[in-house]
Image 1 (cartoon, rainbow, N blue to C red):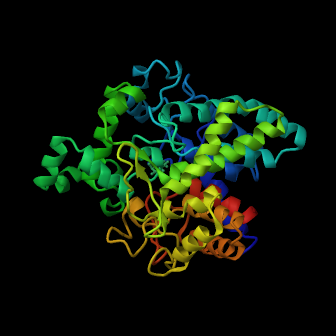
Image 2: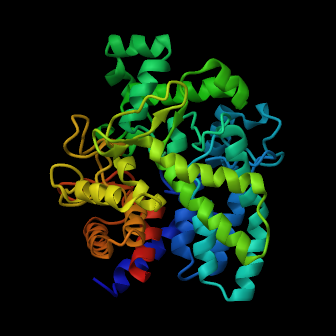
Image 3: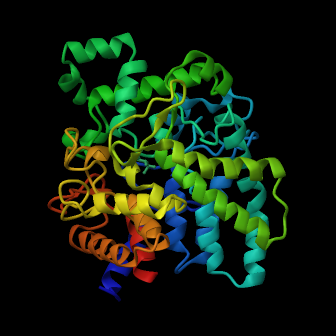
Length: 439
Ligand code: GLC
């Protein structure tokens, strides 16, 4: 499966369909705004055929940056839905929010550095230098913000305050913590009285996509009520941490951050900028801290509760993300690759499932609770290559392309049958297909 003109042209058509003038929406029908890690993946695809649009995709993300350096996971459009969602978030409650953009008040996995570097790879040296100079201040400010606000105890691991910050919205370990520490009394009542089915009828997302393929209604209520709580605290981390037990050092987020820190160092070296020495020490601490998330007994890494330091001991796609971080010892990498090969774990016919089939929580339809997603496959392929598992990377690349070729550019896929699910014409599926075909 090498040159595939139809697949390539189809992917470009999806990215054109979702183009909004300055950025690309994840999916025209379901997700009209600009999303942080989506746009990074999108730029990684665009760079192969329209470098100016790839740069624009990233620059448009930077327009939403907060004065304190935070990059929001969503920047809202000026449309009707945009204004409605902007009202729900009301980012103006925090004085750091930008004056001329309505955004969310939380972030998403820090894929920005990767996107800047991969776009830079397509530029001549002098243009690359200009590109790095243009984006470096915002990138630096973002990483510094992550340390200042999200690593208050200088542990090296940054914490997340909402499941949406992980990009894996309803991933089981976060849902379990949310049910334990966060569910408002009225959501508990809906759960006890089994009113979810009735309420489902009024949902917007399930008008286009079957309810079985979307987030369970109780989990969805939990996500929204957690967001309201953060808004009531003005998205102010000190007020939030003073009142909450719901703060997690998420494995996926921290693995992506480790890789992003390496890229930031490379960018600084390329443009001959000295990184602040405190930041360099912080970054080293993060690399070392990943070891603390390893559980010797089960031979896996886990996310950890920020307050109690207990592991969230459920295996999910996050389990494999240390391969992408790229800093783990060979022996541990081998153990993770073993899980990927195992048909009773992550080795399904169309890998890699977002929850291993061995988990009692595996649900082939269940959004981030079973389906295979193209962005996490891309991260694992990249990690496998850098950890020396070239053959595994190639095999996963081929099965990923085959799945998209057969099923179309869907949001996610069923890991046993390869059948497509979720929204169609999904941007990062298209963009990363282009990248896999071209790399
Ligand atoms: C969902 C996904 C998240 C993504 C967003 C837009 O919330 O879980 O990762 O960024 O949709 O596509």
